Image (tube, rainbow, N blue to C red):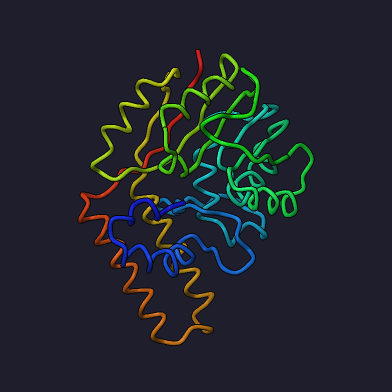
Length: 261
């Protein structure tokens, strides 16, 4: 999820965000939900080559691509923790060459939808908890986690579980954000993890740009179906979201890659 945890301190803003901005910003409209993330876009544009069927989700896919392409996944056994609606799993399986891909999510309804929608050889989905991964030690060559860990009740335990299910030499590809007041705590947990950091990059501006591009696309798609006052309300709400983040001192969005020695 992109927004919910950041706005809980303001019930009015949180209610508006849940009802209007989250669907707008992450392009979750009707029954075609396949992603829950900010999105990612560079300046000049990244221009990632995509199939026509993937183009409507360009910015969310680009965030997955930037996260997953830290490592050559060809022939690897890959786990995604918190796979959500499965769009990232489908994209990576079709384009980056893993031998197998397991998408795990706590929500059984999400898993049911993923199994129905994303039927590809080597791709499977399983209900399970990020805090207690239902796999033996050293099962996977790589683990990926995109914009989900901010919701975990025990982030250090999740990192321990990632290290446990990774084989020696395996990689953890990770992207997420934190509000300014908890960035130091986040950094400390990552530093204490039983994994070695091999890369880190701040992508705040790219994710803001991706979110704005997602919002524009969705507004264009829905504009002819919405009354004028709703379009004005959505524009106002995006301003409220920006104000709320600035009031809290902003946020830091980063992409990492770790290895298990």
